[in-house]
Length: 176
Image (cartoon, rainbow, N blue to C red; front, top):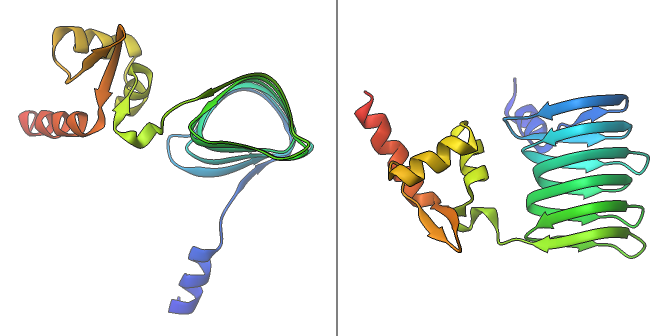
């Protein structure tokens, strides 16, 4: 394979497209560019970019990084990076993200919660549980026992990303 061909492949974004009707739970542990053009009902957890086309109808609880909405979406959406509603978007429910972009013509019926950037250095128990791939109850138990570096702010556990990274490195050394 030539150098030029490799460069062209890196420039080309790859998308996983769903044009069918689906019901259930979809979880992507690795980043993926996902485009939904059909119907989806259930729960969706993504890393990477999620794009809902103009003809998409989605009724779901969505957790992801970056979400662009062109169709109809009903449910609860939490995006760690951004949510963009195109002029053709019809959103009903609760949206939460550090950045929300709403184009002229987009319709939103529900609530908006602006969160600080997820990569700002602090994680919630739910975010840390996903990161460590354990139950939220385990994270809270470890925090209460002092096994995890944690702080309690306004009666909520918060975890500093840098300290968690150090803790993980130390745990790996102990287990080798």
